[in-house]
Amino acid sequence: MALAREILTHPRIYPHITDDGCPVAERFIPPDDPRVWYLLVRRNGQCVGLFALHPQNAICYEVHTCLLPCCWGPQAVELAVAAREWIWRNTPARRLVTNVPTYNQLALRFALKAGMALYGCNPASFLKNGKLYAQHMLGVSKEDY
Image (cartoon, rainbow, N blue to C red; front, top):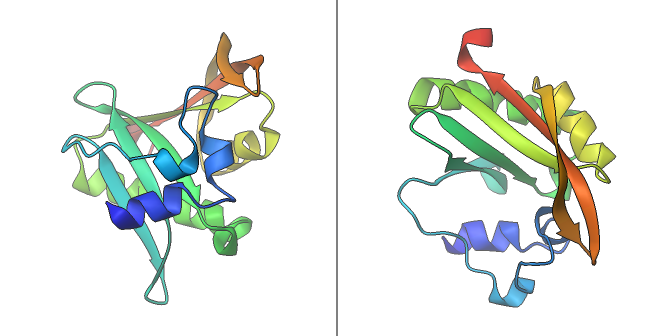
């Protein structure tokens, strides 16, 4: 959990994964729940990020991508695809979903390149710096592969 916390509160990650209801990074404690999966990403023996899976039900998981800057760019897509394949083989997940605030076009492009499909929009559902945003809703199903 200490390693997950270190990644999640990294100064280049935490501002992008939190909203106005989250504590400052120094007070953040990741959920320590046996239903939540933290998939650590390692390259050359070094931990370079994680994918967090939060169950919405028995087979549908919300995924959060938290890769350190050394993995940003095209290699992030490769890591996301590899993680998805691992998830299909090793977890009960049959559908992965994510939500991306409309202001975060970089995250939206990343999710689409990683194989997720846009399936909806959740209006006025994310509060960041006092401003209300809609969220793009994306997902991918195991049966699609």
